[in-house]
Length: 113
Image 1 (cartoon, rainbow, N blue to C red):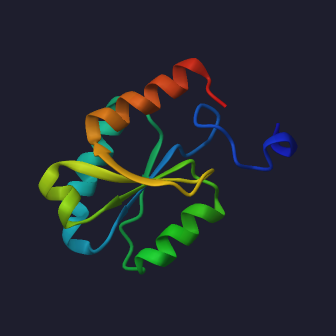
Image 2 (image 1 turned 135 degrees about the horizontal axis):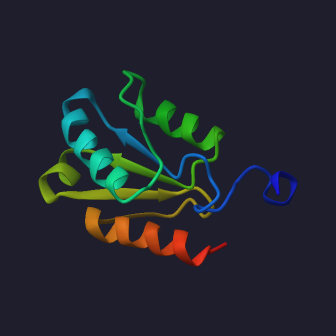
């Protein structure tokens, strides 16, 4: 399996399914709320609340091949949404937290590749 996927596992198989990356320390509270809500949906989540730059946080998440990265900033906190960055396609989009959680749970249950 590791050789087949080259370490970039699908969501249902990945040890960490989502990495939450706040832009700065001021958004750590909202990032913690996001983590709590995703954890309640049985999604494996990590929160990078280090003082590293956003680029370094993204690079670190890409090195361990996390399928989804959630970028948290002022706009996301105000709108109660998340900015999603997909590892496999490098696509980036914004969506509400509830819609993102539903999407991950659906991918997990259907074993989407």
